[in-house]
Image (cartoon, rainbow, N blue to C red; front, side):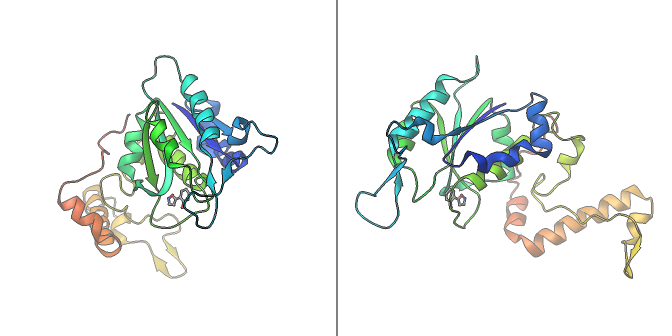
Length: 246
Ligand SMILES: Oc1ccccc1-c1ccno1
């Protein structure tokens, strides 16, 4: 998979050089490129923002540097790859979910546009549809100062689903949201810790009963913490987690 990220703070994406995503890049599973939006400006001050039409506080990101950056990415797309997906992190986007992570992990080429200030001139989003499948995406119902943090989260959630990134693909199957429910609680040695015991069933060696207990714990936790997920589960709206291999 090829991923391009455009930001005025490219160093914000440095954590993607670490751990599993960093290793996936070294192994050639993930070709991730970070671009400084200011490299696509032409004025002496490398200006990327200006005052909003219609007034209001803050500044808006100018359209032309974005068009130059995105045209450059579209022109450099991998040989034979389909239409790239442009993900625009935004509080006004569709919700990022595990199902969307699976969907995006199947793409050959993703581009991320990290907005700052009050956002990117809307005409960039419209213009981008000429070259990309454009998806405004929100991490959740809260406000960040820019898209970089959202990109870190999404690239990790997507990248870890690619074949060869996590050591044991089985671990992708039994995690929160993989089957529409929250994951069960986990325990390790010692069996008694500060007078707290591990549930006896987990020490029984009875794999059928352990599986039953774990499933019950998934439903109990989901009902307690995320009843909204339980409704979706009951309605059969499961995320596409039926794949251990993408
Ligand atoms: O609040 C934001 C500002 C810029 C880019 C993205 C966001 C955001 C908030 C939630 N998900 O994305």
